Length: 346
Image (cartoon, rainbow, N blue to C red; front, side, top):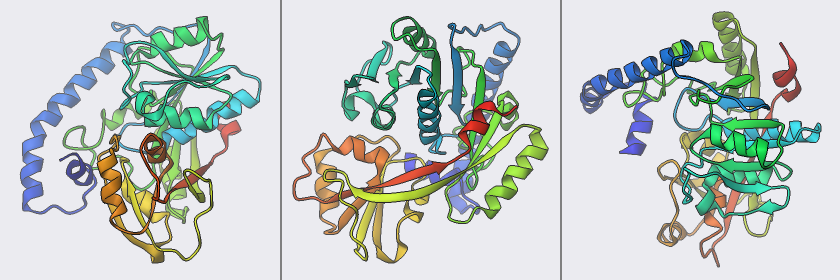
C-alpha cells in the first residue's frame, strides 16, 4: 500500500480506482492539513515555544515525504563546516533504527562509529560513514540532541537532517530542499498527497535548494528562476551526479558492459534507476522506504542471477546480512552545490 501511495502522489493521470482513492483520502488530508496549520500558527505566535542552545544551528529539510537529496546535502554542509574549523554535530531523528530514539545516541564521533545500520537507521549510519570528522546523534527530540551536542560534545554547530518541521528547535539558517522534477507532488498534504504541510510554509525557509537528479539541468534551472521570482528568496541549484558504482564489500568498480538488476528502498526509486546504464538494466524491484532487509530478501534477489545494484543508503543496511557468493554494488552520487554561497550569501 505504501508503494502504491508513493506512486499515487505523483500521478499525472488517474484511472477509475485512483479517483475512488482520491475521494477516500480527501477528508483525512483536510484534517491533517488543519492540524499542521494550527501547529504552525501556535509556533508563529510564540504560544508553542522554540528553544535554542548557545550554538549555530542549520536545518536541512523538505516539505514532502520521500527522498529529495537532503541527506547528501546535510553531509556536504557538515563536512564543509568541519573542514573550516567548526566542531559539528549532525542531529537525526533516527527513523527506522532499532535504538530507543527517546534517548540521545551518539552514532559516531571523531573516534569512530558506535552502532551498525540496523541499530542506527540507514540515514544516520550513512552520514556517519560519510562524515568521519563529525558527530552524528539520533533522538526524536532535536532539542535534547542539540543540548547533548553542546554540553557533552562541546559542539559549536548543529546540522539538522530532515528538520524543517521540527520547529521546537530554533535555527539560524533554515534550508528547504525541493526536487526539481517531483516538486510538491499533487499539491495535497498527506495522505492524499506527499506534502507534510501546505506549500504556503515555504515562507519559513531562509534559502531553497533545488535538487536536479537528471542528466539535463535545463528544466531545473528554469524552476530555480521560478522559485526565486515567486518567493523572493535565494535559490541554489544542486546537481546530483553519479560518481561510481562499486562493490559494497571489496570496493571494486562495476565492470563495464555488464547486465545488472537494481533494487532499492527509497522514496523515489525511479530517479535512482535513471542514473544506471539503461542498456544493461535488466529489471528492478522496489521495497518500501526505509525497509529493513532480511536474509530472505537477499535470497530472493539472488535468484535474478544478475549482478545486483542498489543505493548507498540501502547498502549500509545489507552489511549485517550474509552476502557470500552474491555480488552487490552501490551507486555513489555526488552533489554539485555551491556550499560556500549557500551558507554565506545573504
